[in-house]
Length: 502
Ligand SMILES: [Zn+2]
Image 1 (cartoon, rainbow, N blue to C red):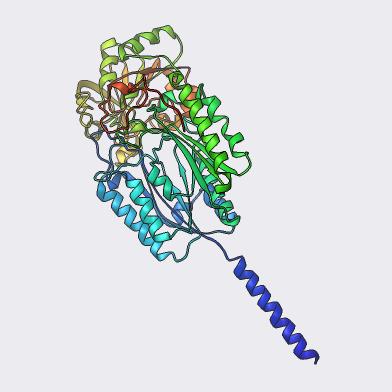
Image 2 (cartoon, rainbow, N blue to C red; image 1 turned 30 degrees about the vertical axis):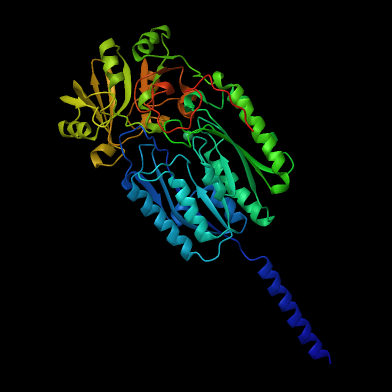
């Protein structure tokens, strides 16, 4: 009798181990992303080749959010992640090719538990009313209603109601200038893990605030928004609430979805009213302070800003060429400020930089130390400026320029004004960008950058910062832009309007 009992017990044990294993089946999360900030005023379309695309294991390399998923014993299925520097509207073919590849991967992935979307949130594609809605609708259709979708976003995104309907979890940067990209992605991953493990049925409450505000007037480190953003942790610690995000929105998109928004996520419907209450409260605080959202540094016409640098003897003054801010989608070849610097005959000045691949080629052909005549800039931005005719000496050619890579730069000098010529559209946002030119920004009297606000590293080192209100596709004066499609009324276009969050 002993043997059959032992056999029976062993079979029972094996069965219970197996069923236990089935209960703790490894969860599967697919990852994807089409991340772009699309300036609808820019005349420069964004092509497929402008995107940096990664696939498969390359996506996960050195990504802290991927480590968080791995540590939670999640099987990660990385698909296509595409990112392009802010620019104009994205070409239809680029978007469709990326989306089709993502959809094919979803079809081949089998049953999923979750999806993580690594997005910016201000994507706009030619021929689509809202490409982000098309994207999430198709993803949802394939993945099914049970799969939880979590997304991380730049707070400068514009998420429309139809997009929010299909996503389960939303979280955005809490700093602008951005210092928390990694933390935000980690938060999106953690929320997804928790929602899967605890079977949450997340519910998103949001309020759309009819405000168009440039990033330069909605810096989270200064008032009035510092006080509002600093309330987010308290909101997320409220019983039943998972997360809260405040989207400043992206104002250089003439689209009905351009606005500020507050999102508060509840674990399930039970906490819906608590989420609503917090979303309305934060939205009201922002609306009440709308007139206090102003530039945090002195600003004015470019000639006035250049003259004003005389007040800061011995200190380097950074001047933002704000209308041609390439980090917000402008072309980066506007010549207004360079023209003004030469007219003012200011010495020891750095113009960083002007995008002009043809001029860079001429510098390479001439070689270092040679004098050349250039017709510089004004080739992409043909609306607000024209090329500037100058005679200059080629001072420096970077190794990248000689190898023909996209990061190639040349430095030329004309009458004490040094200009960096860039092969491709980008901005000087970090100290490293200056190192590549062999120049120390703090050794100059004036440094001009194609930015609005200074990015964190420059913000931390700049002794003085002024914003030149130049005309361009990123004009800081909302009223001067030809808006036709944004929802009206909205502040500041209709500054006498009344509004209350419901
Ligand atoms: Zn941003």
